[in-house]
Length: 500
Image 1 (cartoon, rainbow, N blue to C red):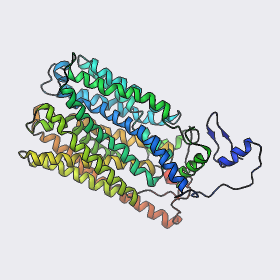
Image 2: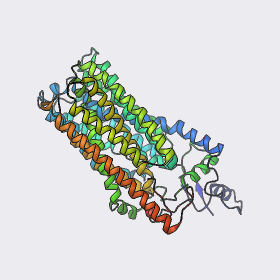
Image 3: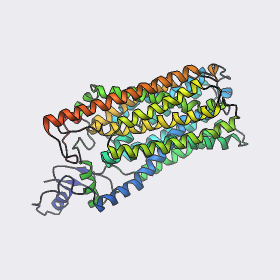
Image 4: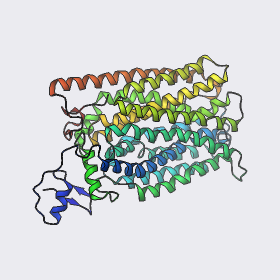
């Protein structure tokens, strides 16, 4: 007989919630629980998904908007006098590169422990505290007066953001099925592109502000304080896990728990399966995903930190360069969302990713080969942002399903992200000021890595397709919505099927 404890939110999945409710009222239950996909496609499920979208998506998307603003505003601050005020002019750009990359060192080191540890805490508290932490770190960037004073808050920014980005795909997997994840992750990740556009508009406005402090200091304050406030709002409004949140009534909870078990039955709850941690470290596909993420992040970090500088080489003013960063980001958000919708409908990730990275690679080729036509170079920027953001949004959804269990997701997702963020460190050091305005080395490296990511995406999708075919032949074709027990073997369970 199952039990549910409303006070501590515990749930024993050997029975249904209805049985648990009746046991509390001392009523004997003889009925069996509903079949695994009894709510699929019903009006009740549609209403529940709409309710989830109305609460979860705005909160997490706005958090990611602030997250990306706070990590990338350094590129805008560079044009507002930050190197002159704090780095002694930094004519070579080397000190600025180290300030930019300091974030990634702490971010890389903390992702896996932060993501695994997050399973032991209520999501709203964990994510809310992370937002407060990185918001304070970003705001304190405005107080820096020398190189160490800029490095320290960037390091803490990376520590706190490591508890947010890799945790969101895991959190979404509590609520959304594999047919819904791609679109939701695209909505979420597209706010990185929105942040690029929004950050350019904010920087444009701050550039014209007449204040007692430097414009770049005002920029950090304006973009940091709202993050702190949003962190406290998250602690109040974001739903906890389905089995313990007060956001759902009992009927909605029953539907959501059935939805979560649709396709797999994993190690749910505040538990960590140590065998699945080991399995993640031994899974070669996670490392290949890391190579893909590495290439995309090198391009993304380069564009995020240096796009205003690159556009300035077109011969425009600083203020206009800030403004011209907006359209490429806006277009990339639209392209990412549309591609993710198609990917969800087709249940195919690798091929759209490969196509997207080819588009990004072509953009870098244009920057390399057409140095004198600013119209072509600006079009190339659209290709780079659209291709790179699309790849990153889809691969997050891809891995969020294909790792099988919660613990393996909590380990594997930050693993490939940590590998990928090493590309961000590289991207921070391949655009030294002395190599402008052509930046041949930076463009060439980013171009090559985009095409490497494209090839690896094809290899990964072929691998998943061959493994699915092997299991179909050996174990039979499973019902796509049937619950697959992944508590012991994670994605290696015989009836588990990958999204290719």
